Image 1 (cartoon, rainbow, N blue to C red):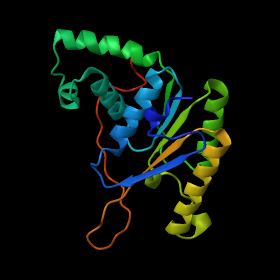
Image 2 (cartoon, rainbow, N blue to C red; image 1 turned 180 degrees about the vertical axis):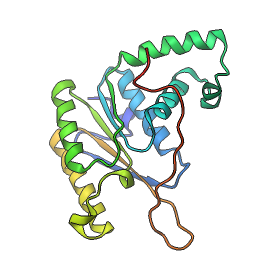
Image 3 (cartoon, one colour; image 1 turned 90 degrees about the horizontal axis):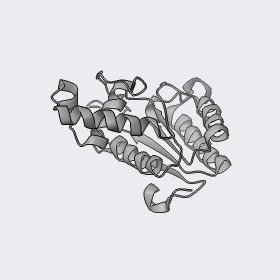
Image 4 (cartoon, helix red, strand yellow; image 1 turned 30 degrees about the vertical axis):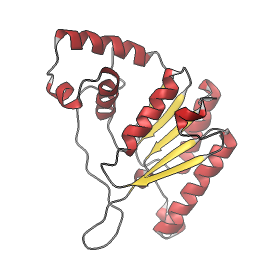
Length: 197
C-alpha cells in the first residue's frame, strides 16, 4: 500500500470528501497525489468527469515538464522542450495510472469499473472528480440532499469493500439568486491523454 504521506494520511477503507469552490486547486492537488502514487509504481484509478482527455493530458504534461499549459496550448516550446515532452510521455505511458473520462457515471457504474481495475491491476487509490457530475439518480431518491447522502454512503462502502482510500471531490458555487449547485463550463484543449504516441 502507498505510504500514508503520499495520500494525506489516508489508509484502506477511508473516504475523503473534499469540497470547495472553483479555483481552489482540488483537481490539481488530487492529480498530484495520483502522480505521487503512480510514480511509486502503484496503480491508481481516476474518474475524471469534468475535464476532457485533451485537458487532462495537457495538465499531466505541464505537471511533469514544468512547461505551463498556456505555452503547451500555444505550441510555444523549444526543441529542448519537445525532447523533454517526448521523454516524459514515454514515462507516463509506462505507469499504471488509469483514467476514465466518461461523465454522468452512476455509483453502480463506478463500482463495476472499480472492481474490474482492482481485479486486473490491484489499484491502490481511487479519485472521483467530481460529485456534481456523477449520476446521482434524483428520480430514485426524490431530492438532491438524499441523493448526495446516498452517493457518499455508497462511496464509503466501496472504499471499505475494496480496502483502499477513495477521494471524492465536490465543487460548489453560489448562484446569485439562490445557493443551488452549478456545473461549470469547460473548454477543449489539444493534446489528448490517450493519444500519446
